[in-house]
Amino acid sequence: MDSLWFLVPLILVSALLFFVGYNFAGWFTVGLIIFVAYFFRDPVRTPPEGEDLLVAPADGKIVKVDTAYASPDHDEGSVCISTFLSVFNVHIQRAPIAGTVARKFYNKGKFMAAWDHKASLDNEQALTVFKTGIGPVGVKQIAGFVARRIITWANVGSSLERSQRLGLIRFGSRVDLILPPEVTVIVKVGDHVKGGETVMARAKRG
Image 1: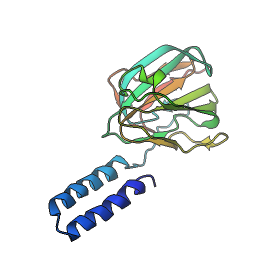
Image 2: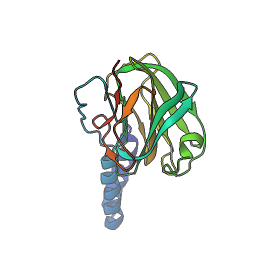
Image 3: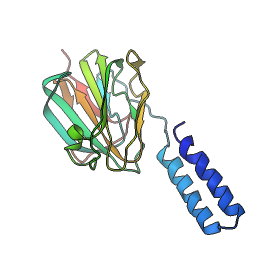
């Protein structure tokens, strides 16, 4: 568990502080332990029925919906939905649709505030592209001013089910969901979403 790298040292320091009589510092460390445990929480998420429904890859607030997106993996007119994660959101990322990891790409970059739209282009980021029944679907994990550690558990060739855990970004960040043009976007800017549960888009039939 990624949280153990933080929790174990904090617990040891807290115990030592109480042992030597620095109770105020000890209670402050207890507060940090509670925050870290809260930050790394990993609630169970159940996706809605309907294989044509694409779910949010992360918890947070929708800050941008771009319906004229293009990239080497996605044709002109693709859709990019950006979600901002505060330090109070669950920071586990999930697969938005069932598919196989076709490509992974990590790009070192800047650490601008994650709510800045330039972060999607310039910040340090990890892109995972899924091969799916509706075409390529991308999940871009983007570092922020505070979040400087991106972890992607899925490897190339891995098959993930919808809502299955994909990765983690530590301490505030941004996640972009990149979809083929043949989808109907359900969410709008300002909506709050839950990773693995909230429907972001629906694949167009026919």
